[in-house]
Length: 228
Figure (tube, rainbow, N blue to C red):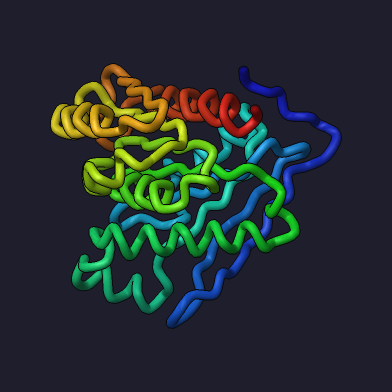
């Protein structure tokens, strides 16, 4: 069940910095009134917290599921410059999963977020990083959503260890990724896992209405599992 956002107070939105070896990660934390939980976004290859697609999903989560959101860069400025030249970090799933875990550690220490149940939202390669992080720390993650993700890159062994309820949202026209998600779903033997196919959507959900549908499905999932 989705929750109607209370109108008594405005959403709090602040820029945050998270220390890591070699620098800092930057993120945008937004907390709606009476938040039921917090969703950390793991961006896909070559993307950042400024991704318009993830910003649309985050807004839907805040408005429809009453979930706080943290859109965060998983690379420091220097690492991003290196990755723009070489592409070597965007597919380093264990490295990115470590960064997701570091961000989760930060949320457990910050006074604004430490009491909120934690969910992960991953797109493209970020979905693999989110699922690997969830497999490593099964007691910390309440729910995971993958949009147009590559969960297969987390590895079948890690997928079998994920216990957080997981939603896989894939475009119906993204046939190769759809097959990979079907295989990943079969590997997720320890978690409640659902595959939702958005008809007419390609990999980036650029077709009219398809991203809105993916965001709606994500909001329903987090409302169900963060709010219980």
